[in-house]
Amino acid sequence: MRAAATVVVSALSLALVTGCGGDSGGSDAKALSSAELKKLIIADGDVDGHKVSNVEAKKLPSAKSAITGDEQCKPLVYVIGGLAPGDAATETRTVATEEKKPTDAASKSLEDLSEGDIEDALNESMSVNVTVVGLSSYDGGGAEEAFKSVSDAVEKCAGGFTAGEKSDEGKFTKVTAEKGAGAGDESVAFALTSDLEDGDSGQAHAEVVRHGNTVATYYTMNLGALMTGKDYTVPAAVVDAQGAKLK
Image 1 (cartoon, rainbow, N blue to C red):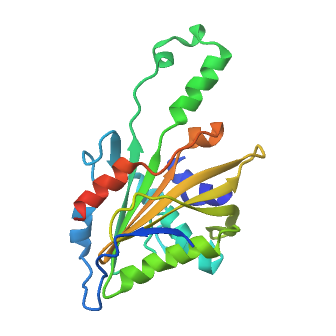
Image 2 (image 1 turned 90 degrees about the vertical axis):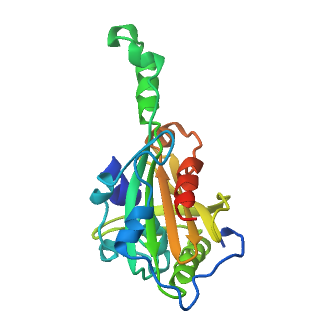
Image 3 (image 1 turned 180 degrees about the horizontal axis):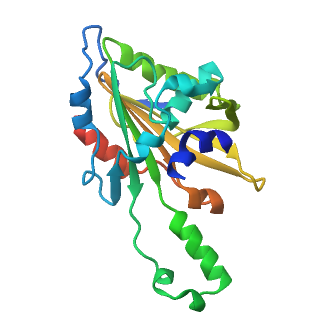
């Protein structure tokens, strides 16, 4: 779990490719400017049930040069940190955090809760999807090349890989292709498995979608779900909201 912790938790605490076959970036495609890209990334109010803020994103690694590990698997680590896969002309990122409604336990005093109630309430409070969203734009066929670097890595790194930030590396034990939203011109979704301190394993989930010469990346962690073993995925509401802004 150290690799995931290094890249993401510290800030917040062949590939199954689906495509429409559609637009390629094209050799004459021009990347969006930084200002244009920042207008297109999701903002607060764009995603139902989520708070969107770039404040947490500023705590993530700011450069790909800080990422270490297996070279062919680095594109997956870039997705984790909301960094652009490939050589992007411009990029930006933000974080979408699920907003949870208060539970019944939240309205009770501590004296009225059993030990089991307290543990359940703690797990429930941590069962929040936190999604790092990255947008990157490319000249020419750069977006297609960037997307391919990720889909190739899902296949080549299926047996696991080592990665981290500078001297603090950890092991992802498995990469598994998943069914994505099927949005954009082509998309790939995958799960990253890590060993947890208690001997169990946990998964985090990611998806990458190409929209013409712009690539959107999504990486979702849910600490409560990791602790309890519950299933979760990249929230469709986040992918749909971002996709709508790129149409």
